[in-house]
Image 1 (tube, helix red, strand yellow):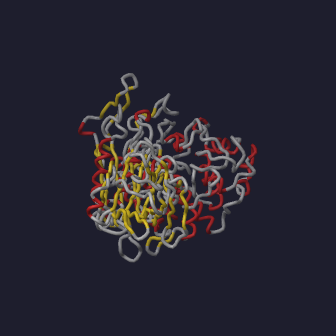
Image 2 (image 1 turned 90 degrees about the vertical axis):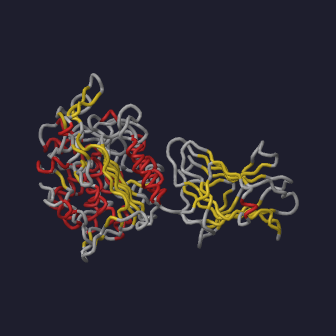
Length: 591
């Protein structure tokens, strides 16, 4: 759900609290195991459970992922971030982690005076299970976006067409220039949110959308807004003649075998659904009591539980099946829901004019505030206000599902996105980085608010030209986390940057005149060369500095060597030289 004040989702990740809401309706498979492995169409499962090694992942970080998630069941800092969660992580076709923690249903009410949750009796509390179903909140936007891209493929809508060409009444209040692309990329100019639930009828709610004026001209700013996806829903229903819930079932969930994904789950599903909030004014827009089995978002609730911005319920395995389908170019066996080029568009940044708010068609891209170290320019995902998140990394063919009930019993108990970041960091760490030249390489670590240094011993570079060479791999939070090559000629009292040049396999040379590397480097090893200053006792070091918020995958250095002509002043391959390296915060890794 969008924040009522119009702040960006990135800022919400830093701790802003927004408005949420709530509704329910069909039936879980009689045998949940029968729905646990959607097939490819050729009889083989699209996904399977397997070990970390079978997925090409390191087991240690996956264990730490669970430990980190469990820590948020405790006060963090005052209240638990969620009552429980289901964690799923995989790579390729192997789900290496599928772990429920905590409680799906714990509280029956929230006591505002004491700021405590009123718990159900122990025999009425329900623990999380692998197949617990969650209100996805804004992760629902991804389904609406996929449905829209399908209709673009079929020629029923055009990406650059004005919305008013399909819905003439939408053009009121200066919205004639808003296009389908603007809706999908949150650049329409709509403000973040309006209380549609105060309008008495469905028709009046729609008219409020049509009558809504823009906060700014279309295409001039990024402003995340639920109204974009509600408008897109209206377009889809108009051009197809089908309701959004029917489109979801016929075009996505049935083809992919996602039998636990739908709008309005029926009453029979309720024992398998994670509860959300004790929804009451003033923190909620509606007085509803404990919302459990119905959509939490107020606007979606008032729209009958079927809305373009919220309302979809699903479980971790179904979301993993969707992730796998998209990573495979839109196909699951013989069932294709999108063309590969359409998936490519969904993972392509259309918001290059708004750095920091990268966005494909429906999918957010490169957002460290919840993707953590999984974030790359092509990493795609979305979060939901109820505590949900889906992250897909095409670069490493990995996917992460974090489903938590973080508004249970009340939304004010949590802020920020720390559990999502922690989980994403550990999955990113679980993807091994193979050393460039030997069995081990130096690794900077992934700690936040830290400085790690890797220093060569003092070398005499006073006569002739001395050159440093090594293999370098880096992936950091852009600008905030920086890797620096620097030297000191006075024993470490003062340090000066050393310019260097890198070249990736098959690429051209790239100069780093400030001696720094930051951001995305393609997650491949680069060959590095640097001409060193002349000094009788020169110390050269790598220094990696991170800020307190988010980190990337870190930096690796391998095969350090310093040569002057044909003479090697230092060679890490020589055990005696390697022993003289001084590492603080860096470690030898054998990924």
